[in-house]
Amino acid sequence: MLTVRNVVKIFNRGTINEKKALDHVSLELLANDFVTVIGSNGAGKSTLLNAVAGNFPVDSGEILIDGKEITRLPAHKRADFISRVFQDPLSGTAASMTIEENLIMALRRGKVRRLCRAIGPQERAIFHVELEKLGLGLENRLSHRVSLLSGGQRQALTLLMATLLQPKLLLLDEHTAALDPKTAARVLELTCSVTEQQQLTTLMITHNLDHALAFGNRTIMMHEGRVILDIKGIERNDMTISRLMEMFEKASGSHMNTDRMILA
Amino acid sequence: MFAQIALGTTEQGLMYSIMVLGVYLTFRVLDYADLSVDGSFTLGAATTTSLIVGGANPWLATGIAFIAGNLAGLFTGILHTKFKITPLLSGILTMTALYSINLRVMGRANISLLGSRTIFTDFAKLQFMDEYGILVLGLISVLCLGVIIYFFLQTELGLALRATGDNELMIRSLGVNTDFMKILGLSISNGLVAFAGSYVAQNQQFADVSMGIGMIIAGLASVIIGEVLIGTSSIGRTVIAVICGGVIYRMIIAIVLQLGLAATDLKLVTSLIVITALVSPNLRKKIASWS
Image (cartoon, rainbow over all chains, first blue to last red; front, side, top):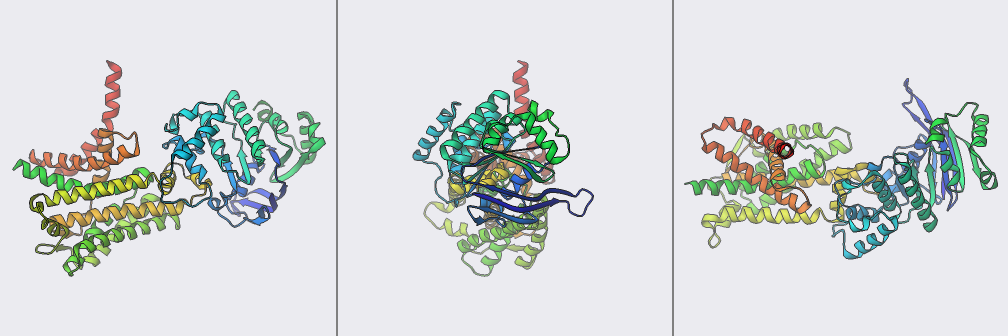
């Protein structure tokens, strides 16, 4: 489904702040894979996600979705196949617009915006059904402005918006990091159910090692712009956090900054 | 006599409200501080008057003014999206360039339309329209444009435009080309402003290269007054609010002039009006919390 081949991304090349964020990263995701991405700060996890999403051009390498090359496509053209949920609960929705307006924009993801009335009774019915599944009472608040919602509600809404129209690839960038534990659990639950229901290929960055092993079917670990561990199948089923950290230290030759990962 | 002044002020207010709709589109909807308004207002006036004096059909000339405004907005948009110039600076650059362009279009610093055929002289020929023709034409124009803008902002394209101003990152990840949206918004906005300039020039029967100076302030003041007095709970309400704001602003100016202030004091008055409008909601809340 997703092929990342030898991708290199260097920031501030030639200056004193030069940073090789992605160092010949290669990754192959099969359809239906739910891959969790872990790694210390600055490892390149968000850079990888941003490169796949198209927020900046890569210096070299190729990115393919379903065999089709998208390396040169700008972010808005990749929206046809790729959906994102951001870390900041406020960046996934338009605050001054209503819930139904946000949802209708998500329903048109990747499609041309026409000069016709956006929302009709048919769409409202769909939104009602989908919002009910979130279990947050939002289905009765379709015409309320999103600015009235809490961070958790907005993040749940963003998740719904990302999956309203089934994407080929779902990118989750620490999407529960800014939420309280209870809401984070709820959003993760929703993430699980929707990815299972729609059989979505997902790439999820997380700082929480528990979540990294509990969710999905595959875990990769990045360090200094490279993928140093790729665990799936039986090896992953038997994995524990302490063994994971051991493997990390062996593969990277340094200690992992674990406080945030364990306490997150 | 008072009725005459009230009539004249309302007529003016309605025409300037067309410009206020344009300012609303960029300043509020797109969240883009577009200063090219000062230039495009005059551009509309200049284009129409030169065409009319050259013998063209005034209705056609007014339509062409709209297109001229579109081009000005397009220019600002390209400066910002393709050359990465900041919103504020790109508007200033367009406004500056337009000063010279307007002089070129008119051929001189001002053109008189006395004795020429304008949309108002045409409209006055209709039944019952000789006394109130200007008011009616202005009213119809503003209402039509207001309705069009209202429905436009509810279309898929309109929603994408609003989202571009609200959360560019999000709408880009939903597949909208935000560069195109900004150019579209700026284009429509400056088109409206130029259209208003055309109306004003035909009403006062002359165009002057400096008539646009200070338009952006008048536009912003009108938007703010309208929003504070009428509210912004929905798009429809906001559109009505900014149109009314345009008229109310002109009325305040007219009253102030009647009270004896010199025309040169108007900028101070405008400033005070905007300050009052911005401070009053907070003041009201504070007074409510004391009692």
